[in-house]
Image (cartoon, rainbow, N blue to C red; front, side, top):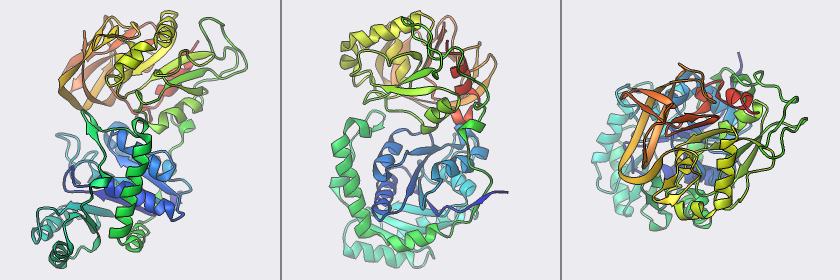
Length: 468
């Protein structure tokens, strides 16, 4: 049995808004600045925080979601991302014990910490309390004996006197204080309708924010004690996750057909090109998707729908993930050459996988602005937030899944597509509500559902094998 030791910490909190992202990102940057190779991770399906983690460490931010990928894949995915690193920092989600609705601890920060056998550092918003902090920490530390809370970082501390009162109270809890971080407005990261503004949309300001977070952590935390705690994590047993061994390595053999372009025809002796949308409007992507596509035999080439007027040369397939096209609707609409290129590709029978933001981009219009007109639907912003885990079944054969395939996904949007499903829907939702959703037409699969392909083995292989 393979045994791997990676020093690691899980940064958790009693509730959202306590400062997990500030502390986790700051710690990542401080330890990276000290010369350590730091592996950044995020519990749950969130796409935005990993962008800040990547900025802090210079490595891809990776998600650890026990609902989307299954508990059995959490440690292997962690080991894959942390290979060769000196330290791993895992930012939690919501409150420490908050998981998938109605399913106990599943996908909670506590659940992932137990799967990783990692010590937890509890970040507490101390702005409106003093001695009560000891009761709060005691409750979280004693709730589940399998969760090891190795220390507390006090956040939003108001003064030296406030800090002294908090430390005195926590002496009775038996949980050491590993840091006291003062209130500081300069580390604020702006938010909007779906959370933090992604790094790609505010690159220079994001660099400054991460640097400010690091300075705050460097000043207020016992870095040596935190590193010592991380090194107490025991070795993890079992192999790391490998894309080539995840239902894709043997499924596709390029060579006889190669990449395809509707205008130039097939090109032998080259892997098929999969064009993956990126740029400020399409920032939601899991790092493993590119790795799985590559392992399945594709050449992944990024393109930016805001700026590029043509698809990459010899494009054989298109992947358009999530993001904020609603913020950039005028600019996306103004890039008429690319909209027409995408429409022509789809009309020719080209293979397209579009997810949430990608679904909106393929519609006739978004908030009245012309889009690609691939789908017989229109999209608009909505006041209602649609958020949560989903269970779904493929209604018919499509480019991502065979008919009847069951998987788990996640929805996260404030937009509405009308109609919500095509003549052939993409998915039949089975939990928490029953409905049909999305569009399958020709080689196009478009849906609101975010799917982590590492949790749906064979998805990337099926997509690549279906390229012409």
